[in-house]
Length: 179
Ligand SMILES: [Zn+2]
Ligand SMILES: [Zn+2]
Image (cartoon, rainbow, N blue to C red; front, side, top):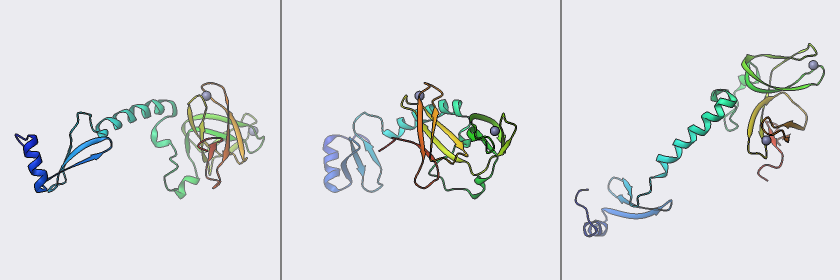
């Protein structure tokens, strides 16, 4: 489209070669033959700005939680092999012998948790735990807890955060979230 002006746009619209429409708060001109469209105002299209901020925020979280591929994504289909270890990253493990709960960051893949009582609890069928503190921090653990509810202290601000097992029994979620 060279040397285009309002007059030629009007003619092209009348011929049906161009189509103007509004989307996402912007005005677009579309070539009806190719489906190609351009945004007419100067705002950059959403696609070019939004993804740039996302990875930055993620990498900061990655520094806290370790590599992204160790995280549990709730939307992912369950892998039958994931019932077994090894596990890595933030774990919240209850000793099956003495009942002591310990939250820690496993930097290497582990199959068991050695409690200070001396008992080693095997890590299997861990469930993700999504902890959202009111201070804004989010922590993801994997846990072998079985209690309906569990309260854990935010590592950042020290507030207690109440969590409960969700209705499907697949994960612990923060009580009072999105209700
Ligand atoms: Zn123990
Ligand atoms: Zn907090």
